[in-house]
Length: 286
Length: 238
Image (cartoon, rainbow over all chains, first blue to last red):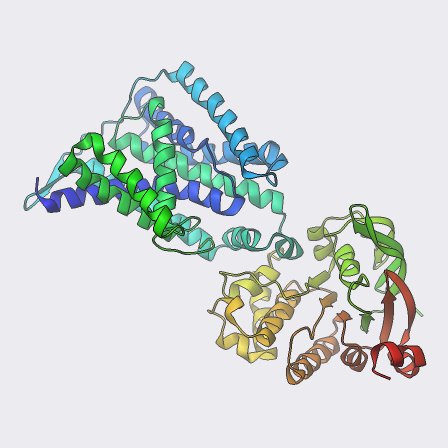
């Protein structure tokens, strides 16, 4: 494989990683919650999309918005009814709660769907430019991932809700004085994080097989992307995702695919030592 | 005298076990500028925070246009028409001047009118128009105070509460801000000002409440208080 092909593979993978991590980053950055549920929400999004397609013949592009909104609702209700009760406790408390919720969701999915890998097969063919070959469904996945990530950026920067989320993150009391209801904004933020996970899962199911065995791996990816790119910003997640995707792609090429993960984690450790704010070093959510 | 816009009766509040306010009685007439003065730690800020619902009252009542606000949430109190410009400005880092101002109008849905009020603030403080795309917290202290006051006005309140207008600002800027407040007041907005700098406060306000260790020690027209021997001794440098 040429270097260029490896690079393109890495970029496609990286865009998916960015989309997968950006909701995790938002929740961590704004709520200071390490959402252990994130990986399972991704898989839930993938499963719902697959079964809509497999059982009812609904095209994944059509299913995606409904899956995303459904998972938003799950996130919103979980935050409002459960997580808000402990949101101001130390991070270990919220981590334990989301870990417990993750166990529940993970096992429900195992019982209901089994852990068999499933994937939507769209059979869109391949494109070839020079020596570079790329399946069209992967390109579509990359485009969707970038669009979703871009949408989140636009919402965070340009909307009333986005402003309120940033305000709550920066100064909770001052936000209250603006009439912002902090508990609701927490719920919306967690909901958006869940929505992005679900949408990323829907996109993944069109490109790679999804199975509950991957929940931990996806959670790990989200974690690494946040640390590499810089926590709590859309550009941070995008940079982190692309860097991780490209590095894994080259590591897989040179050291074998079994070592790709190791190289990703080594990069994370290295950055934690030399630049703990991540590559973008952006403070604050934007 | 008609019923005052804001009436506080026997208000008590504090943080946990620590009681800060003791049986506060005060009122603000419609269209007035009233100031609350007192030394550091007297409870001025806590009083404003209790009025805006951030700190719960433990006793007493806060009446606004005759309605009891005591048990309401901050957003409900803002919606009734009381805006609070907090001490230290507390602008939102990472957001532009324009976004900070728009957050002041968070509860409003009348977008065309919000745009008009934004225009009004840019007329009042032209420097904010120039800097509207800049991160608000990178501006100078005086510009930040302008932005904070503007953010307070953006909710279209009936009563604007300002905590420490002059804190950390050069005298020239304080004068500029005072003029702006008088202009806003003439446009029909009632103002409740908390100040450590009694001289400045008395120049702007018509009535004053002097708070010491969480209690109202004196109150009355600023002209009268400015002649009072104790006040002169304690706050106006003899």
